[in-house]
Image 1: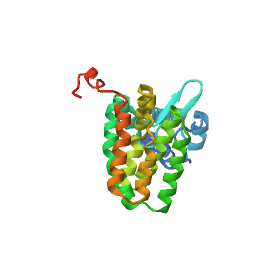
Image 2: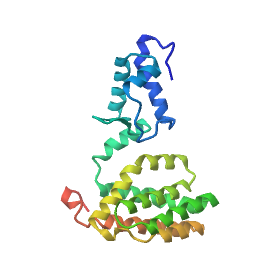
Image 3: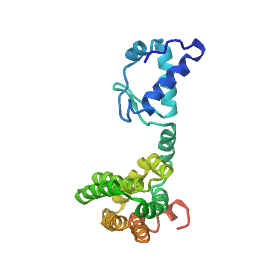
Length: 231
């Protein structure tokens, strides 16, 4: 990991680039506590101040999360993830669910047309998690895994990556819907899985629309009026 040969004028940039590489490559995954400052100084062969500046820059970019008394953790694995995470704090759950519905209608249709045996196995495994989960955090996590499997079955790399970047906000939107209405964990996942398994694009699109409509409805007709928006 040493940065031998890096000029003084670009030393901090070099350290930032190296740390970003470790994060983006997955060597330092999200949630990982990075080595302590003295260890980074030894490994990189640079001064404590250089390491401190580089870490500070990555904290500012949203990739690292300092926790006083505990350490510094990887918060996001790309700049886009970090930007999405910051932006999602301003988003209302109802808005996220509406965008999710738009994405997942097309995702369901494409998944029915393009899924292969591996995709179907992943969807079935995720469906089993949904069936076993109760309302609350466990259900929100299982629901997220199911819809990620459906999106993966589209084999559209742009959609898959976009959905991954939105994953945190989407998961939180479902959790909020469940808080608003405990019945929001509608058992419509089976209908969606069945339509994809059968290659019925139209039925898959309808199932996805119905499934997300339950979560949107959990917020009630007054959710936008309370924010001064038309319903």
